[in-house]
Amino acid sequence: MADLRVQYGGLEFKNPIVAAAGPLGRTFEALKRSIEAGCGAVTLKSNNAEVTEETTPKPGAHVYPRPAHTFLKKFGLTNMMINWEGVPVDFTAEEERKLIQEIKPIAADHGCRIIGNVHPDPIHMADFGLLRKDIETILSSEPDMIEFCTCPYHLPPEVTYPETADYDRIKETLTQVYGVVTEAADIPVIAKANGPIFYNALEAIRDLGVGSFHVTEGPLFYGTIVDIDKMTPLAPGPAVITYGAHRRPIMNLQCARTRNLSDNFDLMSSGGIWSMNDVIERLMCGAQIVGLHTAVQYHGQKLFSRIIEGMSGWLDDKGMALEEVIGKAVPKIVSQEAHDDFMRECDRSVDRIKPVIDSNICNGCGICANCIHGAIAVNDKKAETNLDNCVRCGVCESICPVDAITLQL
Ligand SMILES: Cc1cc2nc3c(=O)[nH]c(=O)nc-3n(C[C@H](O)[C@H](O)[C@H](O)COP(=O)(O)O)c2cc1C
Image: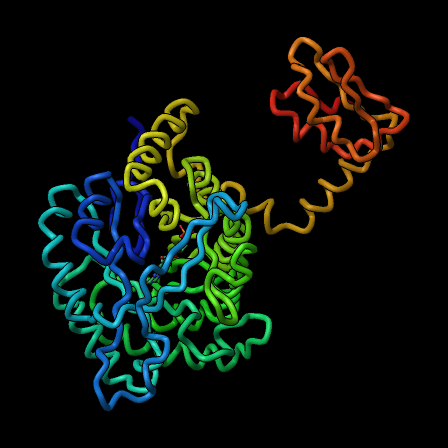
């Protein structure tokens, strides 16, 4: 068994797999199952400010509709979910505190870290005293760390939409809200937000004493799905948040770009992780620990165990230690020079490269004959190329289900 221990926020985690905030951190049973499945840490659901009759602003976003999540397989999108869940009104700081206390003995038995979570919402933003009170309530249950999610959903629009963002305002807003949590907390604070926020404000947040970051993404993933039989969107309104595998490439890039800002902070990342491969990839993009949520809602917590065992086997097979993996791909992801070299290497004339079909492997399925240039046909259950039509694009190699085609130099 490979050693999966990793340092994050000055603490040791037994492995880099984290149950990310959300429904996975909302009930005792969900937390317990993630802990028993072997996670290095579990994160609580964000609490909501307590809503009273006099509350201003009125808690329009604070609804907990049921049902709130739909996986989209029957709409042609695998490994993708939409979610129209607000923050549940009944999950207050007091509820979070109680849940942490209840789950603590089980976490201690399994050496699993507990991460409390606060998501400043419009009510908190209007009343920092209330925000501080909620943070103190959660801290009183003594989690190992506290994550502060300034993931943009509930912040002002200039913080929500990176395309129109005013980063001076963002820095000012974040400095204020992180000021509240860093003043209150004597445990490590995790700043959770999207890449563009970190590219612009990471150092300002660091200056407040925050050393651990969690890069994930919200605004890019708003969308809608129309049920064509009912002729109506699954969730009416301007948009809902989409979660799933489509986030993976975007979050890989955001993670690498965030990691590249400097070496003086620790980094977690979530978004679109569905397998052991995806975890290793995200580590290579510079994350020290990796969060999962949506895939676990689909597969259940056994996915955690599968990934942890898989990672251990992968490292053993490669004869590598975890620290040799972390950040490995970053230098080439963020380098214009590496990109230019790669493009130059790929700049080949058609006579220097061609698709070759291994007739012993080809099963004549005909998928490669979808070639839009008519460069492959299937005759007598074997694929054959017509190099006069072939533009050497590489599609056939990548869609062959049995790897019978290679582009050879
Ligand atoms: C239904 C749902 C609810 C979530 N609620 C929270 C939350 O309360 N606080 C928070 O910080 N993140 C929340 N998240 C974000 C996740 O923690 C995670 O960062 C994100 O889903 C990306 O990971 P994934 O692709 O594995 O789902 C939620 C995610 C989902 C799917």
